[in-house]
Length: 154
Image (cartoon, rainbow, N blue to C red; front, side, top):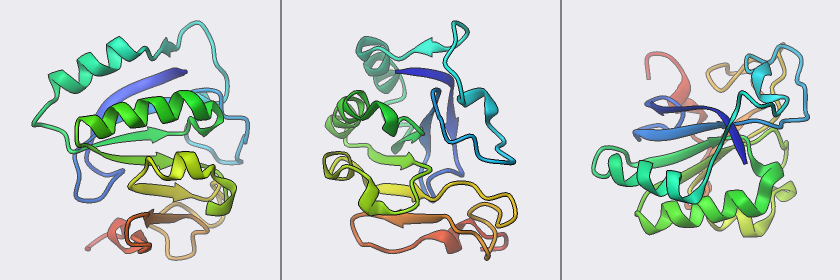
């Protein structure tokens, strides 16, 4: 599984400090996509290995509370493997996917996640901070839609 960027982020999972991986290989090609570098895999991208991932989790132990994958469900088995590792570190887990319905996500993948953002990006509807968005950020443990946490002045 190749990724373009690794960063510690504060906005992708509300109320969590997340180590976030932007996974390449997305074939959705959404109009207005702000991450076109994720569409194709190439030699400039990094390969996420188990040893490297575990070393990063160890180095951030006590500092991060979640792992977030921006994409990657097209590498279901590898993604599940990394989510299981994250769970052994007692980290919350999150996936941003372009799938529009949670029923389109593998149950094996869902059971490893705490949060999921579903819905392809539609430029005219905006992202999670737009009240018109088609996207949903869901707490999978409670079923609650958390979109309201992305709106300004919240």
